[in-house]
Amino acid sequence: MNKEQLLKLYNMPLDELLNVSSKYVSDKIEFCSLVNARNGKCSQNCKYCAQSSYYRTDIEEYPLISKQDAAKAALEAKQNGAIRFAVVTSGKSPDEESFDKILDLIDELNKIDGIKSCASIGILNDYQAKLLSEHGLKRFHHNINTAESYYKNICTTHSWQDRLNTCKLVKKYGMELCCGVILGMGESIEQRVEMALELKDIEPDSIPINILMPIAKTPFENYYDKIDEENIMRTLAVFKIANPKSILRFCGGRLRLSDENQEKALKTCVEGILTGNYLTTTGKKPEDDIITVGKLNKKLVKINGKI
Image (cartoon, rainbow, N blue to C red):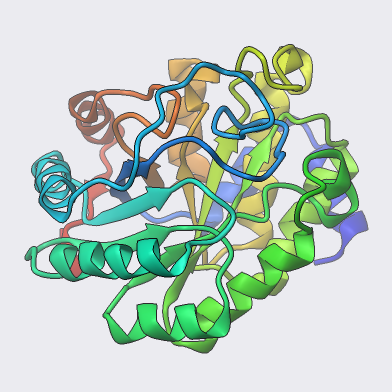
C-alpha cells in the first residue's frame, strides 16, 4: 500500500475507516509495563521531553535503580497482568559503567517466570546490541518518534537515521523490536502517513502509540491543539492497516482520548496496552484496563501467548 492509498483511507468517513482496520485485529489484548530506571539529565534536546537537560522542567533526577527494585516493580506488573516488562533509562546512549549495570538488571528480570524482559536505553552500537542479545533480552524498544521529514523539528542532537540504525541492530541480533511514534507534535497528516509507511519498512513486532502530553517549560508546552481525537483515531486505523502484523500499543498520552474512543480503538486497531504510569506522565490503573478488556469481550494474553 502506497502513500496515496493510505491518504485516501485516512480521509474516509471515520466509521468506514475503522471498519477496514478492524479486519486486522484479533480478540486478544497484551499488557506490558515499565520502570523508569534512571530519570533526567539527558544530553539530547528532544523538544517534547521533560528529561532533557536543555529545559528546566523541575523533574526529579535520580541514578540507575538497583536490580532488586527493578525485580520488585516487574513482579508487581506481573500481578497486574503484564507479560512484558521494560527497563527504561534517560540519555542518548548508555556509558560502559551503566551498561554493565543494565545487563545485571536484565539478568534479574529474566529470572522471573511469566515476564519477558524489555529495555529502552537509547541509541546502541553493535557491541551493545550483541551483548543485550547474549544476556537474553527479549525485546528492545526504540521509537522513530516522527516522520524522517519532520525529525529536524523535534531534535537536532541526533538524527532519525541514528534511531533507524539502532532498530536495525536490534533485528540483526535476533531481538524483538518495539518501535513507534509520538503523535501531536506538529506533524502534518501526510507525515503521519509517512510514519505508517516507514514503520512498515522497519517491521516492528510492536508499535507503541504515544500522544503528546505537553510538559511545562519544554518547547512543546502549548502543543495541545496539534491533534484532536478524530485525527488520533484516523492515525491509529491507518497505522494498523499499513502494519497488520504488528501489535499497535496504547502508551503515553492515551488519556487524551475519551473512554469511548479508547474502547473503540481497542475494538478496531489497538491490541496492546502499556499499563500503569509512564515515564514522566500518568496513565490508567491496571485494574481499570482489566475491566475494559472484559467489557469488550477481549482475552488478556498470558505468557507464551496463552490466554
